[in-house]
Amino acid sequence: MSKIIISCAITGSIHTPSMSPYLPVTAEEIATQAVDAARAGAGILHLHARHPETGHPSSDPAHWAGFLPSVKAGTDAVVNMTTGGSAIMTLEQRLAAPKANVPEMCSLNMGSMNFALYPMIARIKEWKHAWEKPFLEGTDDLVFRNTPRDIATVLREMGEVRGARFEFECYDIGHLTMLKHFVDRGAVKPPYFIQFVFGVLGGMASEPDTLTHLKRTADRMFGSDYMFSVLAAGRAQVPMATMSAAMGGHVRVGLEDNLYIAKGQLAQSNAEQVRLIRGIVEGLGREVASPDEVRQMLGLKGTAGVGF
Image 1 (cartoon, rainbow, N blue to C red):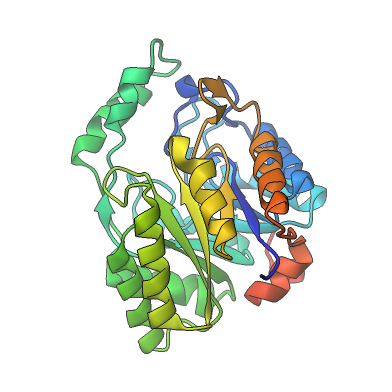
Image 2 (spheres, one colour; image 1 turned 90 degrees about the vertical axis):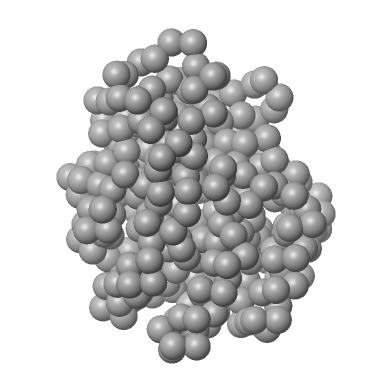
């Protein structure tokens, strides 16, 4: 098996500050947790921004500027900027910071989907900010939009124009079909780094049979031109990541996907989750890829080509 890539998603846009005191919100918190996660073994840092005073998901390039230089100064890990942002953002908003910062890598959701987060409300006893509960309540009528035209725009603006490579986030098997469509159009070049996403209500459930079906489908569609990784939201994070590692795939952890380190025990940092999964994958005989090895595996342009 090849070396294994550990990605860490530091803060995301799904969880709200009332859910955990350890969720990084300010620029300093995001930068510190990102650097610590890289030191623990994460070769890719998947990043979102938040408003530092409220923790609300943010697309403001000024908020990104608060932590990107510190992350770059503190680690050589690959910075993977979201183009998904939050389901409540327009495409123009979602692309503002990536276009300004010209990263090595971007995430790209491969389709539109329901993004239902409202079941999380039942877990919260007290709310820190007024926006949190209405935001979660409204997700029973929330669609994350990423049409073929949107996808083509991201591929052009971030890939063709700015030289980024992509983490193709697939929340359903139809998203693999969409990726194959863009491969056939010549808009995407190998190697393809595919992130199978489980556990978001509106996408695939965290079921082992689904993962094996996805891998068989991707094998048929892309042959040896792709690598896959697995993230699972919530309690299935570690079991599904472990299965991916055993199958020759890669893994993603982080507080974007799961706030816990064990049953009923909040993770106190992203690095804690990275150390946990690193121990598991090394126990399976996998060797963790360094950031430079990640760049070689994925054909990235290197830090000299970024804009931050």
